[in-house]
Image 1 (cartoon, rainbow, N blue to C red):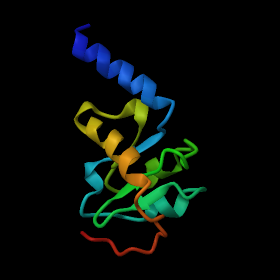
Image 2: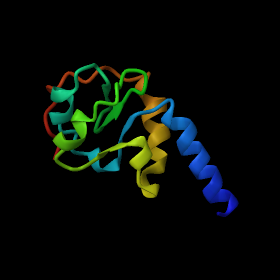
Image 3: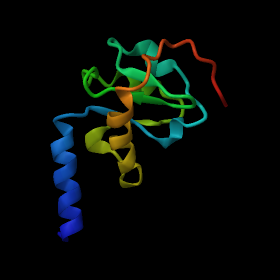
Length: 108
């Protein structure tokens, strides 16, 4: 395994202790709220045109994954490489965004 692959694997492993599920770019300009409705805690945060998951609130129940009509939500351990940046984005942005209430209109 090359050095870059090894560091990516280690980074994912480290983050899996701090992150559970991740909203990815497929949510951008859609912001469906089905996931918010089934979340048993207040894990979703609302940006202007997408949602993110607060890793400190998510309890890793995975109820949101099946509810997302655009398949934008992944467990951090199943996150495709092309969405890796969204792991950080969810974690970094969540603390500054309001809790999603599930009443935002669908944008697309």
